[in-house]
Length: 441
Ligand SMILES: Cc1ncc(COP(=O)(O)O)c(C=O)c1O
Image (cartoon, rainbow, N blue to C red; front, side, top):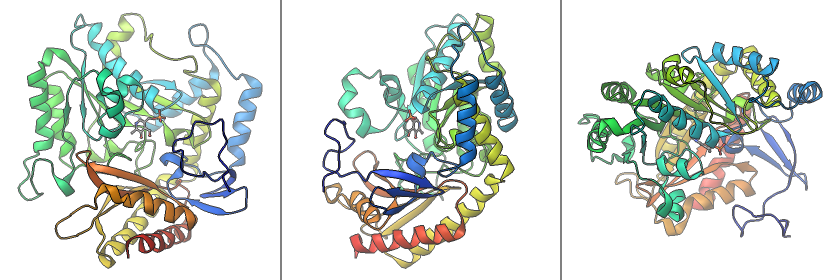
């Protein structure tokens, strides 16, 4: 039975999308009563699990009190309260600017970096160097400094090219190194990119701290960000981290970068920060990054819904729940448990080449040959087949494809809401294993 609506522009036209009518915890239910485990929290977004009445109440109360203010004219008490909670949760950051999504957050973050130099009399210091296989959103600028070749290709003709460096993809090192003989070539490439562009022309370097769907949870080695920070400092280039997916607790700390002992200048946040209940994003920066902009009179960038009261109430409540229910501890606990279970599958089967990630952001990379790391030809659409098998079996996962220089590679990515239990994780992995065997044996 074809259920798709004739007037909706769908992501994929040859797929019948189940019509979800209810969600509770990590489970979704379609109109026929079929139950799915949401193994990837929507798009790694719904940190609190579905159907929480306290979230519904907070939105209702805020909508009744004041639903909208325009920041050009007035502010609201709730945006102040949300900012107090943000400061408590992200103490290394001093200034916060609430927006409506991840792309808006990265756009505002890079514009903030450009304005930082513009207001110091350096309008030419405006290039944003990106990293291949890091995704920052779908606007033209975000695609330009973004490094997802598949998403850039249709728009390549109109994208500004400020330069990209290779990703820290240790499983298939683009510099041809292995952990034993690595001299951090992938990080050092940033210095080459800045020097060749001209340090006076580069405002910022942006990347995803832990890479999400574009590469399937690629997690840089511990020394990577210290070296990146050093290079940025040497050339007065701002370090902008995209923690839209990996931030707000997803990796077991409020910022993934905390686990690297490095402080960025600017961070873009979204997804988990709103629990999965309202479109939300946030730019956070140090006082030093904001100072020239504030001195010049303020931050003019932003969209109509920036600092919205309902969004503010949702962020405040989400962060309070994360603290009250000690959900960061659960992310670490269940993330380790999922990791153990995925490592066990890797031991058991020849088709899992790598397991990687941090906290509740974990992925497996599928290979044809474990020894040689040979990929399946992309024409076989292995990741998509696994996605469909999982869906049939009542599990929703995310696929990552073409992480090897944009031409090959299949990975499956998981990351539930933060309140998942061990029993639910067992069920998730059992369905994943069944689905993998249906496709690959
Ligand atoms: C790392 C990262 N940055 C930016 C974005 C864009 O966020 P949004 O889709 O909310 O605009 C995403 C979305 O998946 C993301 O994962």
